Amino acid sequence: MANLLRNCEDYSVPYLDDIAIFSLAWDNHLKDVFDRLRSAKLHIKPLKCQFSQAYVKYLGHLVSQGLRTPGELKVQVIKDFPISTNKTQVRAFLGLAGYYRRYIPEFSVIAAPLTDLLKGQNRKLTVDWNSSCQNAFVTSLR
Image (cartoon, rainbow, N blue to C red):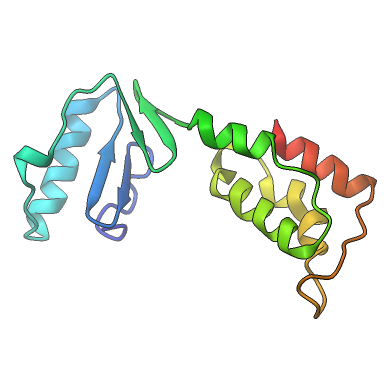
């Protein structure tokens, strides 16, 4: 599905056999997605479709009015995440924050000090949390 909707990322989010379309030019983008489905000989079930919704919660995102934003619950989980003391916790935080990296400009640059903590053989080794790690952690919470 992702290959089928390549170059449609600005107005659609595919996941397995689901597609969310969010757009201010709704009819044009809906037609584009339908044309792509038709060309791939894929069919939709109208009873499973929801059209013209003011907003929809989809895969941890809130999709509305042509925009996609991170869901409030997940954002709160990230904001409440404790400072990590070992590699497992750092990895968990980076996974959670990384899911929303599209909303964080230069996420890989910001998260680099945290990613550097994961280097080395021992998976559960205590990490050396320094000021650059603290800055990366706080900046990614914004």
